[in-house]
Length: 522
Image (cartoon, rainbow, N blue to C red; front, side, top):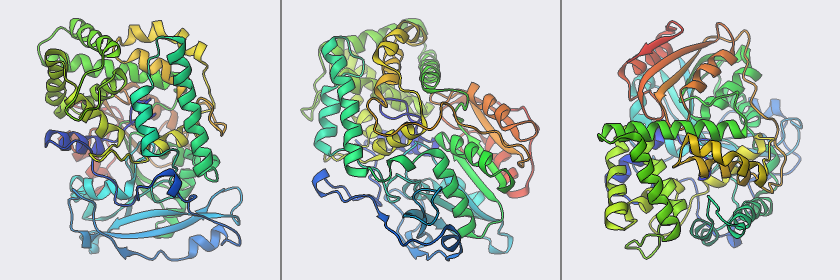
């Protein structure tokens, strides 16, 4: 789950690890998704929505998927020939199954041991707004054991990339917003510009992607997942959801408890938190991760936090130069600090970036981190992941806090985190300001009475989806359904990082072994 502001709920463990690995290798930006064609607004066509007559839901579900060879993205871990892609038509509006349809993009690699095949394993890597078609091949090396008996399947949720992806503005407008809009406004003029930018983004989404905006919420995506299950020929859904994908998985379990097979939720979004609650959770989580980073460097957390907060204040007044000619402002600096906190392997990168900014007065490293996180490549093109994330988040969230309410939150949020608190408090008002579509609910419903056991994994040092949310998810799923697994460690997500967690998850998926509720991996 990506932090709010750059995006609402958070990046995924696999994607975050790939991001940090790319930066450690010296790359300035994450590789673009091969499924997206970068275009300016003038050249952007409306989303891929087909008009009536359209097939009914039953007819769509019974139509076999046509799988075609597709290459793995740059940086993928498997040969392109191992991957096949298909498109599943689903109703744009699930309440009107005979109406217009959109295509859901899928990618699959079949099980390597066909005689022991258990079915398909569907992944969602979070965001919201992350492309599973792009991410799964990059991350597949982490799931080779599961691939022995499962077909690995990724998808672009509706409103994302190749699945009627939402687009709201072009590269020049995106660059201007990152350059000129202060995400922690200090004056009336900065506050007005901050709120106006949110409204402008919403207007752009309505202009370029208006047909899909009312239909990109999490519940709609969960219904698509059941259509995917049927199209794959599976009697129940086996699913691995990480970060925002845990909210999607919990929503699926609530809507289709009888279709739950083996489901794992890792790096769990708190289902009891509303808009302000999510921001408060992330202020707590990122501050906790920052303090753990500072302790690891032998620095007093309180003094280190004050040092970084003072650096941000100086950058707010006097942005830092970079070799590219672009300046590092406070907004980009905050995102640059956030990015490497997703994984402990990113801490050396953060140390080097902060040293460069604080001691050398240059912003090159923090800007590179922010660009990668914001989906900007070396040529200045932005992907549309943040557009999709905004659309999905605002389709879900009913709350629309005002600027006055955000200002009232500032003292408490600053106490939680002098570094991240102001940014996240203001974000509660700016995120869905002037959004053209009303939100569906305050918090997601994830209760799933009668469902099979679901593994819920929380990491004690998770910055983006703090550990406490995992316990709440397990409780909300219901007694006998939510099985809590605690990972004592750092980073956003545990599978592939903790040998203990990885073994438990593999045994659950491959052998059906359900661990004891409350098991702890140290």
